[in-house]
Length: 472
Image (cartoon, rainbow, N blue to C red; front, side):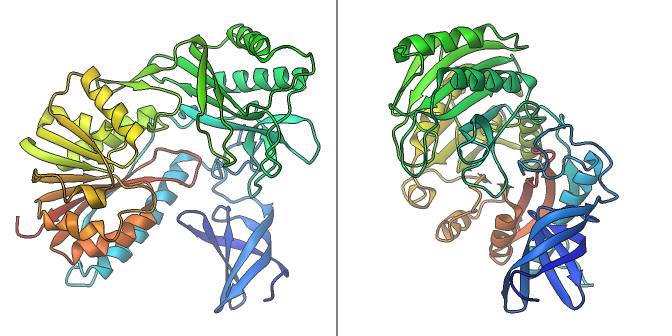
């Protein structure tokens, strides 16, 4: 096989997150973004040390696992929901097997095996999302064009492209209110002659549209993110144009209630959603979400699980795995906005959360006060450094690190506490599998593991494990 050559084959299996394996003669080729059983055409784009990687060009024959229609006009060009044509039970089975394979390998590396050399822990399968469709409570849509010099579009990035933006009208993983609102904003922007912000030249006005919706109340927050480079075909002042846009949005027959319409100015050259200044055009800049009897204030830039009802499954599972912690001190490391810590607060003595993002810590404190939780303390700082400064000693630790897992230098400090049990919540099982052997070779045993599907239709999966001290 040589770079640039085109072949055909059948995807035998897919390993996390989206690596399909195709056998062509004596060569094994990794083809991303496919489904087991698909016959595909692909181009070799990398060959190194006997390892071949290829770009998927075309699906020639569907997989037997593809038993349903995508019901989305952007599938598969968007790439956000690669498994939409798979039956949900088949998705769950595949994700479960992907994670178990990673954990089995990690457990073997950590020498936690039975007399037959098999991984020795309780793998409890996968817990499904309460909703297969319409589950996302937040989306960041981008302005651009679907092709160079084409009409203005508002939507999602085309798979594999930094620039092409596909206009959405029937995205299935969000409530239809999202589709209605984005279509209205796109039409208004086109009529107004507004230009999108070019990433290379840093010229243009429109950048992003941020939409959030409470699963509990149906309240909706809309935030138009622009640069300060306003131009308008109708030569209206910016304030007047935004007032018109506000009225258009309020006239749309949404199922939910619009609680706030905002305008954020972002002149950063980085392609990120951030605020130099945010003005309220209508209503307020927040709403409340309800999770397991607790109330959380959500602002445009709050970090919060994107599947609210799925988060309840995740947090209930974490609480179940942790078991009885009455009167005990629990460390919630990488605590984000403190949701997990607040779920645990009613059943433990004290919670201390550590998070590096100061805005998230402020939100955690505010929400703890909102819920009347007086036994929660949230500290802003890097876990690696903060563990040297906290005088308290925990009886249990909950870890919910970012996608890259736990910093290698923080691991020894976490293990030094010698707590009886730890809960590790991972949004990237490959990072969990990398970290696990270190725990197992440092006096801990993997007792239980389970997956929680927070992202139906996509390659992503959450995993929760219970680690028990061997001499406890």
